[in-house]
Image (spheres, rainbow, N blue to C red):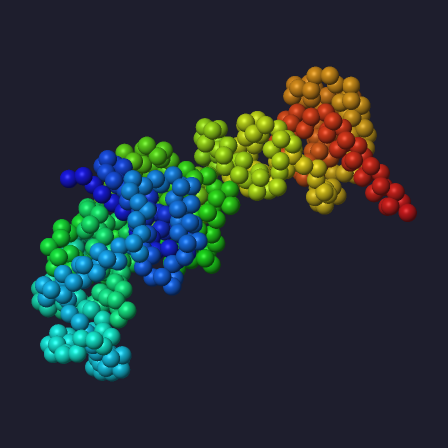
Length: 472
Ligand code: GLU
């Protein structure tokens, strides 16, 4: 039997990290078994589904590299088929029309609640089929009234639910549109899904779906319910914990491979291994090694993984992301060092592409002003002499290489009989406006002679102006 899995998001928002993890698990399970991974867009709720959200889901999947073998299949294009199945269920006595008014249902609910019973439809229209078929009505599934349903969940183990605990759920609304449990069942059946891997918020739907599948004589897939993701405070991960949309992580400078590696470990483990290449994940992933209990999101760990991927990934993988971030930061790539060089210099120093790009800004653009703390500390009168001394040396330098630049800085310190830091720190602030940058010789090399000289002059002017205003 060849494995077929699916990811079935409802397009009512962005691609949430929880959704992305479910997609990843389904994708890995399919890859591991040389199976097929299908994307199904569950857009039957027309009021809440938007094209924007469909686009966001497709974009997030593409960015993560979760390619699907079939799809996207849209449920709104399959209404005829759902109708056909509803007719079949009605015909076979597995479904019935229910004409009960809202008022009757509300009264029934009230009565059951006050008798401390679980609210549930009482089967009135099944027992007393009404005559009139032209008035608005819903269609209910005729759930088996005795026995039980067993789910052999690949993560949670065996779950057994008594049928008398299950309602005769509505499978078509009064406007004729099918409901979630019906469409999922028809789709899983028609698409030949062998393994349903999804969030455990659907676990209560599973026995109902199995009953409908059985009523249709359709094969029952295997189920694996993935526990939810919690924020650091133990509550379900939500916007208030920070970024939850996959594309927000991109905006924060996370690499797709780092996020995938992070997500795979969120609820799955293989010994104490933390770093998994995609090939390794595909080869090793198993549902049995998934956690039964919820996992907590840990932003520090994501940053740690991102640092790893920034410094260890082949340049070709990081470059498209770096380009995206530079242009997002309004920087023109042709105004600064080539990206290979930039990445080589900066990759060990940052755990996100955002901080990498921010620190690289002075290589592409004149900075507006000095960081005030850095200027206060390093652009002082004592810096005038070393900066002037060095500037003269750099003006005459013909070989603008890291080695000769290093030599010039060192010589300046020696000749003035001061420590290297007394030259290097004011120089760094003069060149970048900040007190953090790659090593000083690399910074000089990347900036080039012209920019270096004009920025040293700018710092000299700044110090002198400050001196003057202080003495006034
Ligand atoms: N459309 C459902 C959701 O987004 C998932 C349904 C399923 O996986 O069965 O929560």
